[in-house]
Length: 561
DNA sequence: AATACAACTTAGAACCGCGCAA
DNA sequence: TTGCGCGGTTCTAAGTTGTATT
Image (cartoon, rainbow, N blue to C red):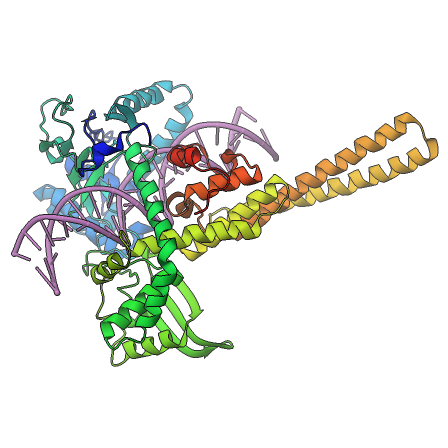
C-alpha cells in the first residue's frame, strides 16, 4: 500500500476523490409475443403488462422447488394481485388454476437460442464488454479501480435461504429516483438516464460506497462498492488479519480469563465466559438476535436456545458431552457432539434450569455485551476475530504438520487438507454436486484403466529386461530405459488420479472457497508456496491473486502468522 | 439500556464458458 | 461436433459491528 499516502486517511475519511459513472439499471420489461399464452382455469387470458411481468418471474422459476412451497406461493400470489388490474384481480383468484407452462417453455427456448447464437452473435458480448468498460470502473484517489457490483439488482421474486417467511415476495424494480449517488464534489457527477432524476447526490468520503438504494423486502440498504482487488478493500482485509495476529499474542491470557470466569459469582459473567469458550473452541458466530417473522429462524452463539443443545454426562465413553444441533447462517445445519470441561458442563446445566426449549440459553447475554467485554480485553477485538484467528492459525499449523518433501500433487493435496480442516471448523458446507456420484465413477474407471496400462507397461519392461540380458546390445539396453521411463510416467499419472479421487471424495460436502477467501491470512499461503516451491497459481486463481496482491507482494517464505 | 439504522463482510447457489472426451 | 463436467464468476442474501436515537 506504499503507493497510497496513508496519512490522508487518518482523519476517518476513506478517500479524497471519487468519480464514477453510476449504476447500470436492469433492462426494461419487454412484453411477451402474443403467441405465448397464459391460461387461467384452462382458458386463455391476456394479462396487462404489469401483471404479465410478475407472472414471468414465477414462470422462470417453475422448475425450482420453491414454486411448490406454500409460503412462496402465498407471498407471490399476494404481491402479484397488487400488480393486477381490477378485472384481473376479480378473475384470478386461485394460483393453482394458473398455467404458466407456455411462458416457461418460451423462456427455456430463449436461453437455448441464445446459447446457439452466442458464437455468431458476438455483438451481445461486445456490447456487454462496452458496459463493463464504461460502468465497471471508477477513479478513486488517482487510481482506476474495479467496481464489484455495478449492476442494480433486477426485479424478481425474493428467494430467501432456508425456511424464509418472505420467500416469493416481489422484489420491486429499482428506478433512478430510488438511488443515492455518492461521489466527490469536484468529480464529474454521473448522469441519471434521460428524463429521470437521482434520489440524491451526496459527497460522503467517510464511507466507501458509490451507489445505494433501499430494498423493499427487508427494508435494508443495498450498496455498490469496489472490487476486492481495490486498495480500500485490500487494506481493510490486511487490517483484519493484523487484528487476528494481535489476538494471537494475548489469546492465552484471554483463555485463562474466561476459564476463571466460569467460576464467577455473577450469572452474566459465567454466561459470557461459556459463550466465549464456544466462540473460541467451536468457531461459532456471534449470534445477533433477529426479528421474528422477518427472517428464517437461525441462530449463532449468543442466540442459542435451550432446544439447540443436549447434555450427556457420558456418551460413547466420553464424559461431559454437549450435542449441538441448530441452523446457522444461511440455514446451514451445525451438528456437533463435543466433550467439554466439567465446569462448562455444570454451568450449562445451571443455565438450562427451569427453562423451556424455546428460551434463550444465554438469557443474560447478547452480542453487544459480549463485544463490549472483548473490546476491553484487546483493542479491536470482537467475536468474529476469533473465527479469523482460529482459521488462520489452524491453516498454518496443519500445513506444518501435513506437508512433506514430496511431488507437487501431493503437496497440493496437503494444502487442500489443511484448507479442509479450516472449512470443517468453520462449518462451511455445500450441497453435494448433483453429478457427484457419476463424476466419481468416471474418475474411478480412469484409475482402473490407468492401472491396466501400468500392468502392461510393467510386463513390457520385464520382457525388455529379459531380452537385454540375453542380447546385451545397445539397442535392447535403450529399449529397457524407454520402458522404465514409460512405467514411471504411468505411475505418476496414476498417483495424480488417485490423489484427485481422494481430494474430491473428502470434499463432497465441504466448501473450501469461503475460508480461502475470507478467513485464511493469504500471507500464510504465499509463504508456504515459497517455502515448498509451489507456484502460487496452483493455489490461487486469477481473481484470488488479484484480491491477495498485497499479500503476494508482502510475504516471504519465513512469514509467521 | 434498548432499539434502529447504516455500513461493511461473509455466504452458498446459480450461472457461464471453456476444454476435453466421446 | 457435441455434450458435459468443472472451475471460475456473478449474484445477492444473511450475517457482524459500530453508531445514532430514543
